Length: 346
Ligand code: SAH
Image (cartoon, rainbow, N blue to C red):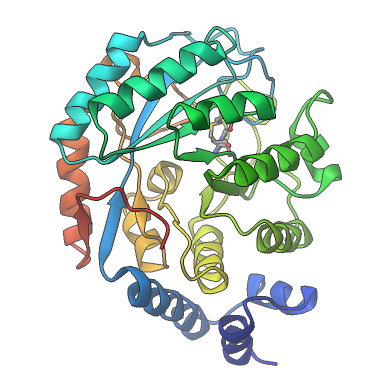
């Protein structure tokens, strides 16, 4: 089958054979790439029009008990300047965010056990009390099913937990031995069973990643059927074991965004900050390849420069309002519009 036929098959069946997927991930003419992007755009616009959903990202702690080889806030990085936000600071972010038109708040952090289950529940319920029309998303890593249940009962709506790679061998090359892909996947299934809208995902071009790994990731996600999929390029961080590794490319990230949009027509798919970091118009290009979500930063300016998962992160010197208006202009420049909406899965 040629690429045109493969795209057609992916669209009608939602899945391909391994070798067929590998064709779509391999060499491709620029016409075929354009075909792939325009097919993804068409599906995206059928379900979501030209709307772009906003998620206000609050990076509330950069303490982490884990030591992932790729991540700038891994516990062994003694150069990281650690911080934690207080409840008051976090609620200040959500209040400002609400005024700016955000209706989803994402609390993201390292795996920081300083925040007990009671603390997390208190944060979630306080935000929901202040802003009952907003969704709260958690992205705080692996915790027990009982803890996930408590956060859900306190009002959390969604949970982002990228699986990072579905292949145990690849997983072990990116993480210390205490961490396992089995547990990561179990967390995702638990979250889904509890009732969260869940997000899985990977870094594109992470060290040692092969096309077969990416196919395994697509097959795993087809099985899980997540509501959200986070895909961004891997970018090295200077104080990690992967400091000399190559970053993932714009091209590969756009290709995968488009494939994922065609496979999962309704999925909530962000054009990530990492994509905006490797290319000045990366997020716009991501939207044009099928993405429908952007996640401007709502963290206080004082800590922005400290939540550094990778080098060169954009927007570390801006205020929330600047990020919001910058994003609006960027989306308008490509004929899309950011909307004031929770942006739930349809
Ligand atoms: N502690 C939480 C949040 C992790 S940060 C958790 O475990 O889920 C969110 C995502 O950033 C990670 O899932 C990872 O995919 C991505 N990330 C980390 N380091 C990165 C790097 N060097 N380049 C690109 N993305 C990175």
